[in-house]
Amino acid sequence: MKTVLVIESSISGKAGKSSQLIEQFLAKLPADVQLDRIDLASQPLPHLEMNEIAAWMTPEADRSLEQAALARHSDDLIARIKQADAIVLGVPMYNFGVPSQLKALFDRVARAGVTFKYTEQGPVGLLSEKPVVVFATRGGIYQGTNADSQTPFLQQFFNFIGLSEQYFIYAEGLNMGEEAAKAALDKAEQRIGELSRKLAA
Image 1 (tube, rainbow, N blue to C red):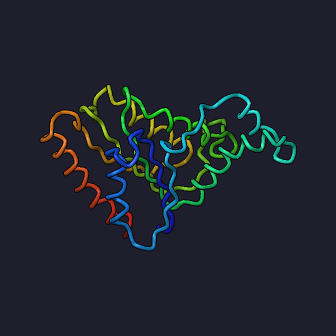
Image 2 (cartoon, rainbow, N blue to C red; image 1 turned 30 degrees about the vertical axis):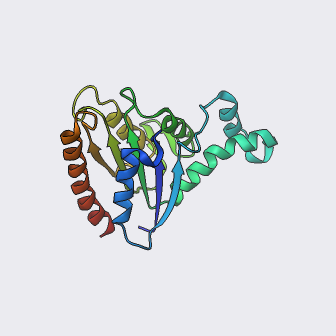
Image 3 (cartoon, helix red, strand yellow; image 1 turned 180 degrees about the vertical axis):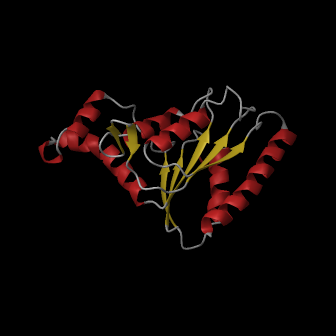
């Protein structure tokens, strides 16, 4: 593992538990690992609009200056994902879903003919396989229940673009009292140690 793309989506920034768990994980990786960071709290992406999709569909040589600027959002994100050897995401739960800032990023990563294609057998992901590590932090307990809309969505999204090697580290019950929060973070820390050793091997 040479380059890790780190995507943080907590609106609490570095104070967010998902961001703090990411830092614990990164601290356990080999010292020579290069980090490429995207902080969606400090640099949020706007919601996707039709004029941006039109820019993608215009051949690069024919794009206006405005279209080139719009297409650059998606082109740069996809290039950074392709260059990374692993992807690490911090995903707090907001109202049962992923942060809207993260959804805006996903909307620019899923591009027909670039990160996936449709075939007679269905869609096929076009990205080269690499591990995706998700730090999912929640105020309540949702893992394994029908209320956990995040996990199946994230699994489906990454499978769709060809990234099936996925690891989820959960820290739940963070708003259910000090004892519950400490137990959840201790469990996540143990999982971090196990996973960092596996990926660094």
